[in-house]
Length: 352
Ligand SMILES: Cc1ncc(COP(=O)(O)O)c(C=O)c1O
Image (cartoon, rainbow, N blue to C red; front, side):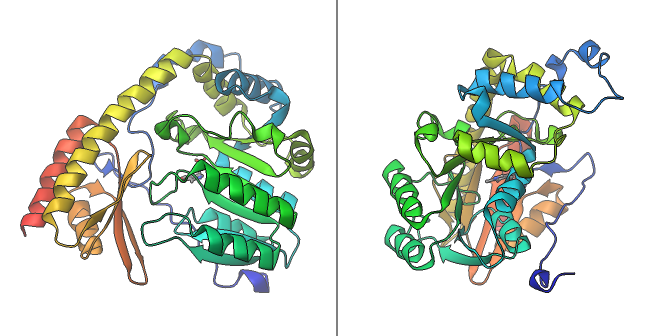
């Protein structure tokens, strides 16, 4: 293994029995599989590399999202998009800024490229320490600043003016700001979607894995101006999105009303989860429930690990965070039935 990669830990992927309630990965709790026309898949050119299918997918995503076709690239999940962005932008020794907490794949991919990663802690309430980030950008001239908005795992949506200020600071530094909007559908409209092409140094990341309920297909999208798209195309493997995923994704993206209904249904479940989490946090001395613009809630609390284990013994899987003194659990929205079981288990734990 390369010297620079020593200490790199694998992203923990766990498989589960069917009877486990999975509230740990911020996925949609159900999918639109039954709306797919499988007879169309019978036409799949199994012996051909995917080309037409990716084109059709990008066209469908363009119509669905409003981004011009020429400015969209598809990836094998936004995970692959993050890898491609790092390959495109980073030479060994280049500086990269990430926030803490935030999605861990930013740092990992930057490190794999041999970049120097500077991590900046968010404020106590998970707002952006704007002056500090700007000072670090000025000091380091980073090639990339990657952040999720809304943030995973905090759930917080940042102020538009703050993001705007960071795009400006990164422009001064000659670097790109990667705005990962994996959860933006739950938060409403993105203020940057309409203007992304007007920026020299902004790339928006989207995914079909969250509000669109297609995590299994691994479909992510990068949106940026022509110059950036051209550069990333140069490093991208030619057939990175498989035909079956592209076909299924295309079919669903062509049903915007259905996807809208799907989102509305999820928002109702998120509201239900919020009520449960409020009640729970109110019963745990010192617990802090953070406001969320996503499909999950984060609670900072003593006993977070014990709670995660207690729930897992009851076949409910949630995500535990325990870095240093920061102890928290993150719980994604589920079905009404799953919520009823979750609520019962949470109340039992808090009664202990
Ligand atoms: C902020 C953020 N970005 C990207 C991803 C990766 O999503 P994808 O399934 O598109 O690879 C996740 C997954 O949890 C995420 O939370």
